[in-house]
Image 1 (cartoon, one colour):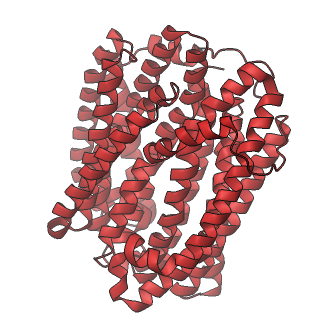
Image 2 (image 1 turned 180 degrees about the vertical axis):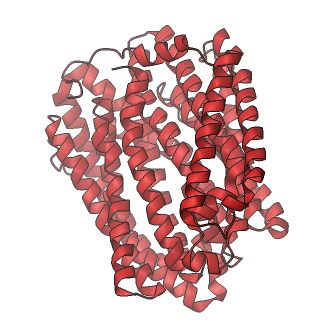
Length: 532
């Protein structure tokens, strides 16, 4: 299967999840707007979601996948099964203990870590504590699910792990639709969404568990024991968790700072949902596929293949991400108006603030995606310490910039801090890869990047003038159908202009597309079957 086809397999599931996520956020914006319950739910959900990405997705996609791939390579399926059961026993026990401690400490955690600004508003604070208490067990389900997703990705069975998150949005949309049908108040909606998150965690865990069994590996529970393999995993996982979840760490910090201002938390969350579409579809897909492929190439000593994998991944991500960044920067307000401006959201007058945040996130989007493409170059070599150091520097930059800008700019200042921190992290990751000789010099890629940037600028300028030309059709008084058709037509026209310019300037060519689509991955290793 070609590299791009593998990206597409993961991206298709992610795209379904993100598309349904839009539907969820549209319903939530109409039901809750940027009011106190919206702030409480988004702050409460941010906490278990951050832990999930820190100790599950980030750690296990960075540390578990290379070790699991090595077990398959050296000991076959039986060795991989034994290793997985050892990890499962330790992970489940640790998660259970962590959940109990966090549940008992939730009032202190919300007051001093998650949303310190809510402490001055008793009703909002109490609601946040209750919602976070309901949702935190979601961490157990998603952490165990992330481990099994890592196993599936190592076995090149990408779809089940990619499609499982769809069910979070399916369930939450069902909750919101039922609440609308019953005419529920905002607080009831908040409680329903929280219980829906927990139910979604159970469903997602069941999906990947069944997929792992179908792949030929049945995981049983073993008494927790610190075997050499588990110790090696933990040594790699802690820095990998911090590195892999750096965007989420910065978001959690931003949420804590934003809690000092009404509506700021929910405004950041609504903007985040939109820019997560290109980030998830391109960036996450590339990171999930690239890590096991790069690990295999390095384990077999094929350095040329490893360098080619990294260069093609960056080429592919920039080709798709640069136009998305330009469109978010130029078209942020019409996008927010179309997606969210109705019901309680329109009544709160939240569009300008959310649009400003989204535009700034757009400028940081290429950096966030490049981080996903650069970090596998470290993780596949079992170096998780270096990117952890860069992540720490990125957090320091984010905190300093956010605290400086928030008093003057409000929530958009936090978005600026996040974008700046992302670019700092991406530049450091690339610089050290080059210095160590782990990044193969690729002359065609170096020639294409400035031409792709130029193509994105041309597209952005055209969209800027087109937006002003169609201002009335995109304005708040325009019917929804008119706004939707106009915006989609502009986006389609902008995409067409971008591709024409990219091919005309040499930023892309059919040879590049053919190399990516036609590249075949290495054959399945011993004890492994290809994707059905």
